[in-house]
Image (cartoon, rainbow, N blue to C red; front, side, top):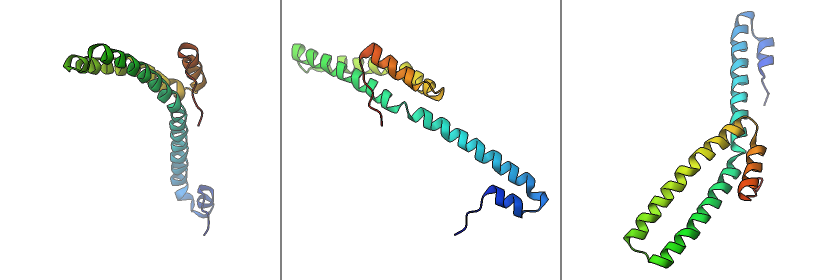
Amino acid sequence: MELITLESVRMAAPEETEEAVETAQRIVESEMQAFAARQKTRNIDAAIVALRGHTMSVLDTELEKVRNQFGCGAAAEQLELAMRRMVKSLLHTPTIRAKQMAAQGRTDEYVAGLEALYGIEVEED
């Protein structure tokens, strides 16, 4: 097996292929930058999961209180659906901000904010 790099292609190819090699180098560089940006946003996943887990735990605790007080009738089910929709709606903006901050390389700030505001400790991968 032999490794063929863009440089080895450039050295072996005639001058008329130089433009193709330069184009290939630009494509590789662009894809490397896109990959790095995706990886930055992936680093925030644990924080998003922690925030959602914390919020859903609080919601479940409150819903259990409602069930204990009012039973499991249709009204309780409607209340649960409404509360779950509300929580998902409230989590939308913090989730979007998390991804934006991660793309800017500010994951640590977001995680620190979760800890300061909610006492959520984010497990690192």
